[in-house]
Length: 430
Image 1 (cartoon, rainbow, N blue to C red):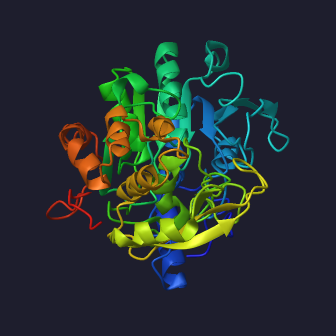
Image 2: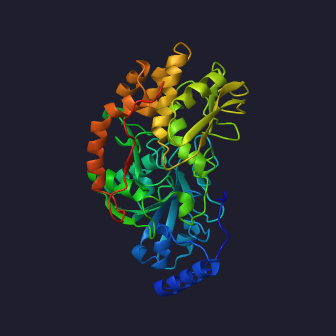
């Protein structure tokens, strides 16, 4: 599908009628399009279809950014601000800011369009303070996640749930699809003593959950006692990728600009804490990775000999305009996903790390990998020469336990036999 910032307004624009009228217009729109477009409704679409009745008479704080859009491209900010039966009092923004275009700390400000205060949750504080919540009845969360443990939007949600529970106000999540599907789950599990803003909960790297399901898991497992409500997605099933939903692609952050890059994020992003460029400052973030000390052809050959399913590498040479190795020539690989349903992204990232440990033991700062991989045992295994399969096999017991916990909080289930896909332990050819 094409990369779009927003979709043109359709028959939904300005609609504030009852639920029956909404569904009539929805059916007309789909039929007129003659396609599967708009077959998935996100939480904000469902809330709108209900006439925002769940927020009747409430003073609302909204945690959102540029990804908070309905089917027709109208922002959740606009929809709640103009709804006649509630009062939108203030906004809260995550990392990258309200418009998703800031790659540094975000300042609090007044939104020129609405006159509302926008409190940054990625600046002086990462939690809404009691003063920020004092005149609110409910916090509403509407942000598109990407399906990775270390994507900070889910930590922002977790922190905000904690503070809402302390303040005694409600918390509502407007659910959205996991863009890289909800069936593929890959470890390693985050060490419990390594919790941080890039690791709010001991999740596997790729959790296969929606943001609403994660909210339920955080609330239950961390015993937050938040008064939580999730407005469920309509029409989504777990095997769907974002381009199968009929929803527009919106770049969730400045350096994830397409679904293929989101697919590779849990592979290449896994390595970002070491001394590698992951393509930030280039035209293809998370598709390229390299460093000045790498031999590109050597790395590409070593990787392709592993014959990992659904992925190929080609030698690459690039000069980042910013970020690590700014204006320095880097050599490495460009990754291309050839079959996304067979591609195990975390296994790919671990295999690259394993190869780098073997080829460049003096140059590669492998000890720093723990910041993103999250498992000290996994990093020690890589340093000893273990393959991705061996690393994942060693984490299998923890992953099995996580899956049992995860099952309690899933809101969407496959029809028929379970389609859950886990990385299988096997030995790659040398």
